[in-house]
Length: 151
Image 1 (tube, rainbow, N blue to C red):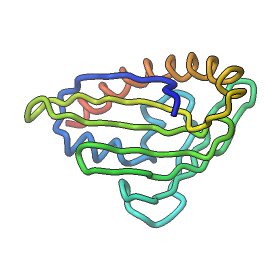
Image 2 (tube, one colour; image 1 turned 180 degrees about the vertical axis):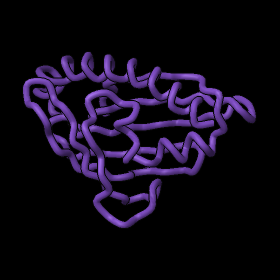
Image 3 (cartoon, one colour; image 1 turned 90 degrees about the vertical axis):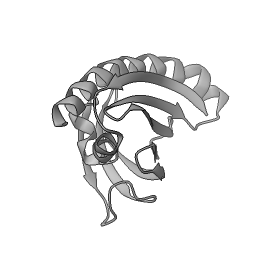
Image 4 (tube, helix red, strand yellow; image 1 turned 90 degrees about the horizontal axis):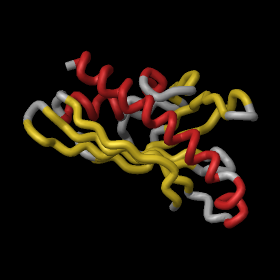
């Protein structure tokens, strides 16, 4: 996998409350830029491995695109991972939650590409890295505000 972007942020919130919000992908657009909407594509519960979502996102030079996402890994209050079928990126989002105290956590957010094509790595990923990192920087500020207001 190729790292596209990452952020770390300390947030004054309990891990369980943060996980509840972060694992509900229908709320992802509240804090991540250019996400137009995300809807559940099945009846599974939030955070359940295999749960599917349909994300509508704004892609530079390509406009709006719908991407199917699925929960790939989930450990309550600690880790949440999704993978998408958007070609050419084949994105993988990883969120780690580390308890610093009873009321403060560290959230580590990362986006990877699962595409191993050398052509994609040379021609597309450099631009994708820049765009996704810019969005991630905005998202970390929004996420901090959202989570601290919910507590």
